[in-house]
Structures are given as C-alpha cells and as structure tokens.
Length: 122
Image (cartoon, rainbow, N blue to C red; front, side, top):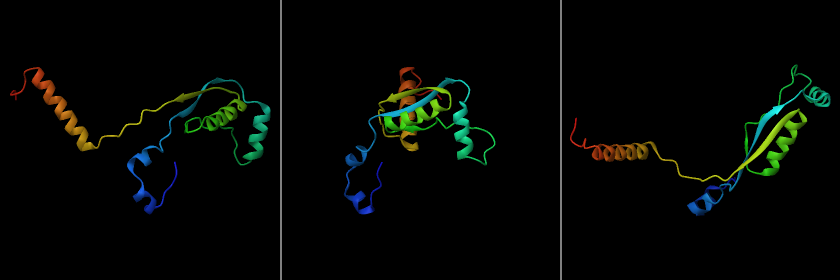
C-alpha cells in the first residue's frame, strides 16, 4: 500500500484506490517441529544477549508477497519448525456500516415474518 498526499488523494477516483488492494495474500503456518538446532540457539544468544530464553519468530502475519512469506518460513525452519505457506485470493467486499446492517437485518426479519404469516402479530 502506498501513501498519497491530500492533493493526490483528491485527484484519485475510488477505482484507483481499490486497485491498490492485493490480488493474493500469503500466510505461514507452523505444523510441527523438533528441537531447536544448536547453531540457531548460538545465533539467538549472539543477537539477543539480554534475552534469557529462546523464543520463536512470530507466524501470525499475513504477507502481501510470496517472497516475504517464504523468508519467514525459512526462518522458522531454521528454528526447527515444520511449516506450510498458504496462498489465498481474497474477494474484497465493502463492509456495511452499523446503520446499513441494521436496515438489512430489519428487512430480512420483515421478509421472514411475512413468509410465516406473522405480519400483524404482536
């Protein structure tokens, strides 16, 4: 995602902004693992001398590029983890506002009540 100035933002159309959404997203999942290799522990101790206990790199992020996801997967593999990299193609949709959701649910409720013959029931 790129940052734009106020002037540039005012010149952009909504379509231009929507086109900035990624076509694919990537996620790394840890599916298992074994002991942390000694060389990884040594590298960790050198990098974080004040840290007493080893901690695994996070696998919580969602990545916009496969190369970033693979780099995180490689880092986790170096820590003794078995990982899988997943790819998804998101279907971007506009989120409803609270008022829009209430109106939609009320319309669905009215339609359901009518189909059950409960229109005038109190």
